[in-house]
Image (cartoon, rainbow, N blue to C red; front, side, top):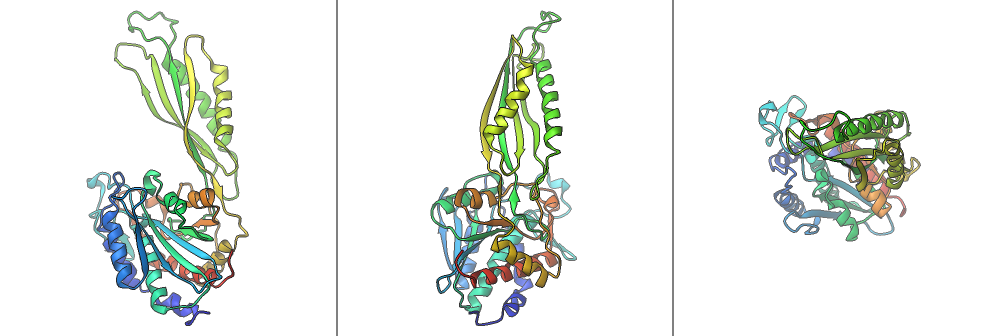
Length: 398
């Protein structure tokens, strides 16, 4: 049993520590590319060790970009609960668009401004403070808490996936991506496909009026894909935003006075849980088929995908979060479909671990100049997550 009350532990989370840790973590630049998470990982390890927390660095998948795993061990017989946050951020962008130094926290009222304050240096600070609080309380519960600070999430690198493959797994996981304190139990997938159009390239002055035109063919296909996007965007899912289909990277042409002989473009297809890359490829082939041209070759290639995933709404993890959002956060729980991808997919798809996104901050300020997070939201999130963790650690194994 817990030697001190859950309420006492939750209220003991120190705001000054979480603000200080967020500030110091933001001051360690980790823009990805290239990542450079080592200094950040060292900072996390050094602090956890000073607090007496069991911790280690994991040098896979890249020894120059170590990951951190820490534990508060239980007495046995209970579940392992994982709290996860990534150390890398996006780059600062254009410095002139910032009102504040990007790699130095500036506090304005309740807001902490700085690159990564919301995504996810504040979440790392919360997780560190939770580990410190539980260590100092010396609680006795059946379950074990594991904290993962991972590399490479912003560039879809295998940080979390590698930890799971190496056996750093559990029964439940909370990824503290910014959700504005809403529960995100699902994640859209995404499939990337390349379409290549190849035809004759001739000098523009010599091209016949009815000569095959690769770019005109591209325009026809683009219009068909736009109609496809509009059609699928009407589909709904209770836990996820609608699917989409967008043309992204377009590469065409070699000379300003020659018709295009080759055009390549990428399709970004956001996918609902239950959709597969094979299914989407078949749909794309159906769109391309009516627009075949005898003199222009059209080739569709699958590149890669991130899996759409979802955690059942009756999971004990979601029940525990809902309870603590009500009792600690003093608000009604809200189920929300994040429009972004995250390492939730690795936990669910690769390891079969019920997982949700749940964190402080508005995702719309992430990746933007003057990114910020509210201190009040950080503290509410920290208390809800700690309360949820304590409830799960006291339960029987999943």
